[in-house]
Image (tube, rainbow, N blue to C red; front, side, top):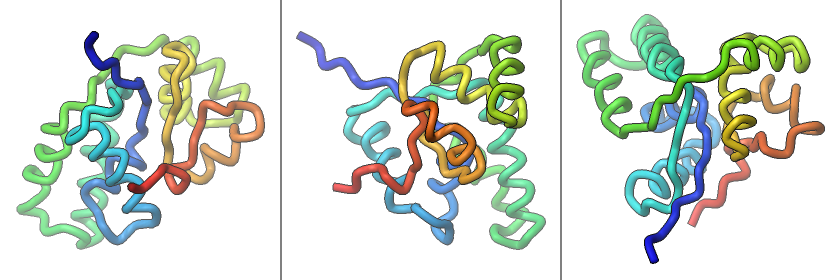
Length: 148
């Protein structure tokens, strides 16, 4: 019988930690990446929005001199090459969740995908986590990810 990987949603705050090693909870984010990319222990999905949020994260990092501007294309390409599966989400569900939890529509998109797929959402966004953690057990703080 084929091994079935556990499905998880990641947001841009987690994926950007795969690039920048000067952030909080990098070892946990890298453990998640390795469970996905090296061990095939999980399947990682995200809304299509992820690609644009990653591009923006790289732009901001270059402007703040965290990475050289001439490395921006390579940095984004490396993140996209990890092949997080990008999925379409229902905009109305995102809107509903944004209002319900006082989130941006962007953050709510990740929540909408996790809700519709009935899987965990791993985030490094403290505001998102704090807004929903008491009601939505499917939202997990990346700092709690198991490092082996």
